[in-house]
Image: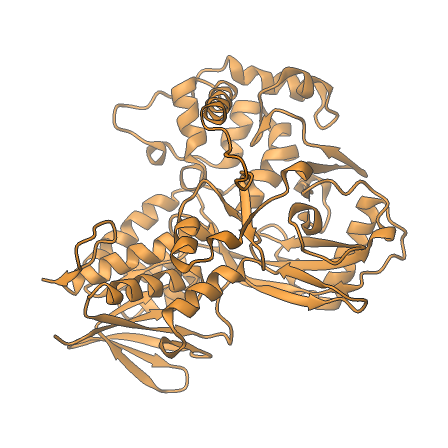
Length: 504
C-alpha cells in the first residue's frame, strides 16, 4: 500500500499538533506520513522562548509570546505525557497571585472575590477604591436583573450572540466594563469589547445568565462547586501544587521543541514559504516562493487567517472571502529586567492591567520573576510589557528602541522606581497580524468555512482563527484537521483504542 503524504503548512502550535498526530498514526500502522513547511527560520509560532545570559552571571528564561497554558484544558498535559516531558510542567507561584489595576497614578489590587469581572464578596467590593459608589450599586443590581431574553429549547449562546461591551454594560454597567472587563477579558483576546463576540470567546457568560438568572449568582455557584471539589479531592502529599496557569521549566517553547523532535527533523522544512496551493488530479500541489513544487495527497493549512486567505483564493473563493472577514491585530511583547535594588515596590504580584480609559500606551505588565520560578538570576526582576491590540495598532510603527523606552518609562512610573532606572536587558517580540479577532457572528462564519471545507477532499484548515486562540485550542484544531484529511484518504485512526489502525 502506497504511503499517503500530507503537507502541513505552518509550524506553530496548530501545525505541529497536526504533524505530531500524523506521526502517531504512522507509528500505529497507518500508511501515511507528513512534511511540515514553515516560512520562518524557527518553529513554534507565538511560542518563542529565549535563554539569555546576564552579564553578572545566571540566566533569564524569556517567553516572547504566550507564557502559560490553562490547566483546565487537557491538550497540553496529554501531549506532554506522550512526549515524556510532563515532569517539566511548572505551576504558577500561587503565593504571589495578585493582579493590580491602573487607576490614575495608583495601582489598585483586584478585590478579593472577583471572578472574571463579577463580584462574589460584598465587603471587598464595598471597600475597593477601584470603582465609584454608583458603579458598585450598579454592579449589585445584576443580582436582581432578569435575563434579556429567555432562550427557546435547544438554543445556544451562538443563537444569542452579543458583544462583550453590550453584555457587561447591560448586566453590570459601564464602569465595570471600563475598569476591569475590558482589560481583563478583552485583553486575553487582544480584542475591542465593542466588536468582540461573546458566543465565540466566553459563551459561559451568556449561559450563566440563562441558568442562574445573574452573573453574580452563577459565579457564586461556580465558586461553591470548586470549593467542594477541593474538599473532595485534596492534593496528595508530595504532589505538585495545583495552579490555574502552568508553563514549562524552560519556557513554553519547550513544548513545541518537544513536538518538533517527535515529528523528526527530516519531515520539517523551515524557511519554506508557500506561494500557492492548487488541486491536481491525484491530490494537491504546493508551490514554494523559491519556485519548488511539492505534491501531496492532502494539505492542512495551519496559518494565520490572512495567510490562509491568500492560499484559499484559488481553491474556493467563498472560503477565502470568509477568511478575509476575520480581522487580525498586531501586538508586541517587550521583556526587560532590572536590578532588584531599583524596584522598591512590593514584588509579590503576577501582573498589572492598564484599562483603555487610562489612555496609557501600555496594555499590561507581567512580573515573570514573581509568577514563575527560576525565570531570572538572583538580584534581578524580570518583567514583560505588552503593547498594541486593535485599539493601539499605531504603536507597532515605533522602532524597537522607542518601544523599549516607552515600556521602561511606564514600568518605572507605575512601580515608583527612580526615573533614570535602566534595564540590564531588554528586547522586543513583534507579532504582526498574530491575533485573530472573534467579532460578532464569528461562529456563524466558522461554521460556514467548515461546511464548505468538508466538501473539499484532502484539505483542512487549522489554527487560532477558528474556535479558540489558546495553545491547547490550537493543538486540538490541528488534530481535528488530521482526523478530517485522514478520513478523506480512507484511513482509520483512533487513538482511544488499543486496536491497530488500518486502512479501509
